[in-house]
Picture (cartoon, rainbow, N blue to C red):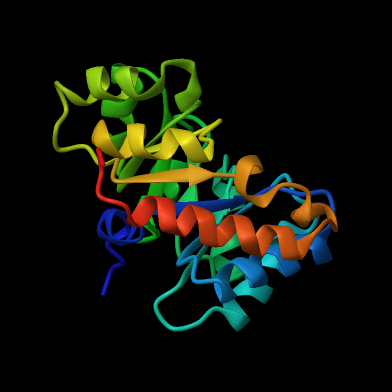
Length: 212
């Protein structure tokens, strides 16, 4: 059965983005996030040996959790992460990997900023649109882009701090994707205890009713 990435994101409401400078640190950070209850974790391919990190996290992920790869740009990238067991891919832009992954049955959250890009990404086979960088326009911009496309599942990614979560969810995002504000330096060998605290705080924030 093909994974319904949009439904999974809407249920979890949080996508953790791991982008680090150390492979072991990335694996440790991802493991900590999964242990704290984060259900959807993405490892950016800009992380050294990210494909190995994806495979390692797949091996320890609990039932119901999803591990994917981000910054997936090319058909070769798709082949690499699929071989590692990635369950979904994320792109930073409208790129060739969208159609390639969709053709393999691998769900895609495609990066887009403008209405044209969002529409194009969905036509190419994306399962959801990663509004990126969301911080450029904030929740008001998300709402404006969603108005003509109410059926596109948008995930707000890029500069989403803890205080920004209610605004994006209230504006109609099905989830928020958070990298630096959540992961901090943990994916580069930094403080895992602090990461665990931030993970619990973000999980609490996305569980609050939108607009509360």
